[in-house]
Image 1 (tube, one colour):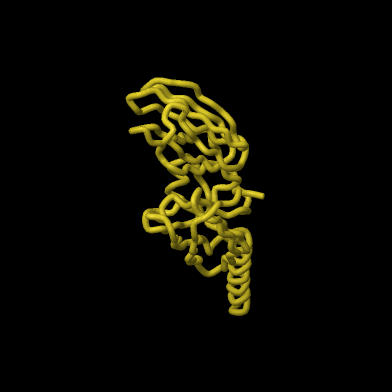
Image 2 (cartoon, helix red, strand yellow; image 1 turned 90 degrees about the vertical axis):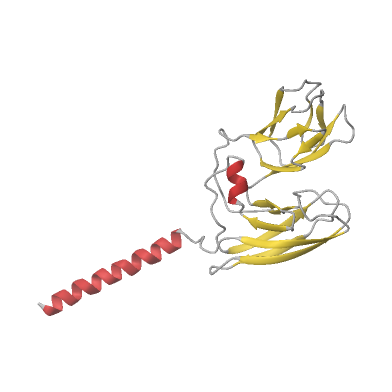
Length: 227
């Protein structure tokens, strides 16, 4: 009788261990995040630098409820740098007191919205990855960038140059939900800023924790987002 109870207990423990091993193999993404700081030479601020993975795990995301805005106010595009996923429709509200005419001559997306008045909103679908430089045909001093990304594993640096990938808060604000932490593996990390040389580095994400990096950038011509 005692032997029977011991056998049952042994089988229960074995089954539990087997389930834990199986669950771990199906959920390898414990490690999580790539964090760091960007240091720059020749710029007043390390903010608005895009840090991103050129290739990333497969993902799925429903963009139908996303509300992504490139605002126009006080003769300025806001934000200056706006990363979006391929397939995103961006709104261009005119919250100024004057007419605007947003356009782009970029190969990724050529368009012209024509002149439109304060209070009006126009939209553009960005369906191809790459860099889109925005201008206003009425106000030459206005400029901004929409960076159309293949995957959601990106971050924009804050005023202190800090970043975190994935950036759940920013993705949530863009209507991109359900993006998990990075599974263990080898990744290629890259930077982009219109006035800085792009930097590409290899990052190994282990199973037991986050990665912390420092990236040093200098002024120069950036490369394309993807080759």
